[in-house]
Length: 132
Image (cartoon, rainbow, N blue to C red; front, side, top):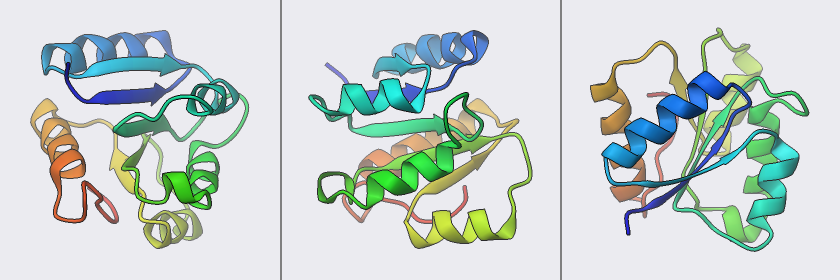
């Protein structure tokens, strides 16, 4: 079985794209539509990577992702926040400080695949810092 990726996104078109593309690339995908649903999954399961949308119905993805970083069991887990919006400087700085990768939409599949490979196989135990 391939690496396990948790997608936290409430847009069915986006999650369908992720599911099909990542399965084609050999990854196993689990979807959560809210941060609360993702938190419930993480109570008993640990993926190899989390991809979270910035704009979610119950919380901002970046705030939820940084809260995971405060837990020792998620301190080194690769997390990517995906957004199609220009983020405020304070948000970008917080993501950088908490070593959460920021990925900007729209993106090419090549750039997305390369970012995933770096995050899952990177020199810091699969951990990357800053924007992609």
